[in-house]
Image (cartoon, rainbow, N blue to C red; front, side, top):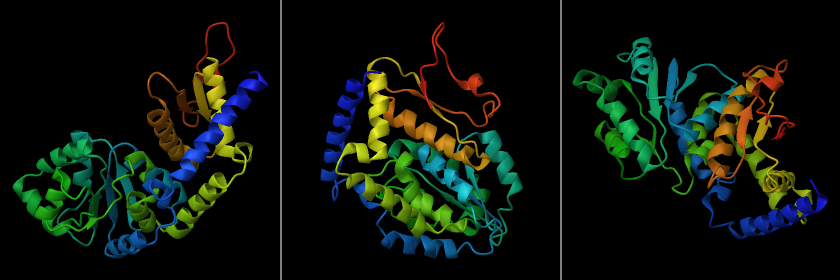
Length: 298
């Protein structure tokens, strides 16, 4: 790739950083790492789960994958926090049989949702409860909902007297790992959420305070990807975590990359290598063009 192409892309990244700096105070996502008020509410709800054996977290897409990525940082195993992100009635039936819904001392259950289009799936799942299970759910389940103020899911929560956690309306599911969607499971897993957000704030500050885009690793990476893509030399972006614990991080990264950048026929296909051949078989997961070197950035 010609150096001039990279320099042009880096200059574009610099203008993007300028735009991002101008969004501080208005782009809700940028203010999440420094928030502390919502941590108190999440900690209060988490305290009510003491003595429970299992916490089943239901979510779809990035709103679940972010929390799943945090399981790599798990510090405690009681209660056991597990994620169910596929509304497969067969799998969910197996899970329900494993839970003891009539013993309040053992199981709690909360849901995470993001946009209104996702709420229908949650509502459909709850409609699957027959009247007997609905009565059990009202007494045995402590639903902690992250939902819009007026939605099918919020209405269901109100109907069974469940508490709800307020969630920022301007933050979509795949970016919600630092909101209460990720914070509540993180607290239950013994993760220091203040340090978690503090780390994010440190990276954000370093990126936005960079005098030159070349001093911001995120801008440099974006420029490199953009320059290669503009020349048609980038088909795949490879994440090779190596560490087994980071396999769940790879799933979240893949969804973040694909849904955020795969628009209008642009972007590269994200591939997380771990679990798809392992370090001994990296070429097994790297797409190639016939007769050419791999069009991939690792």
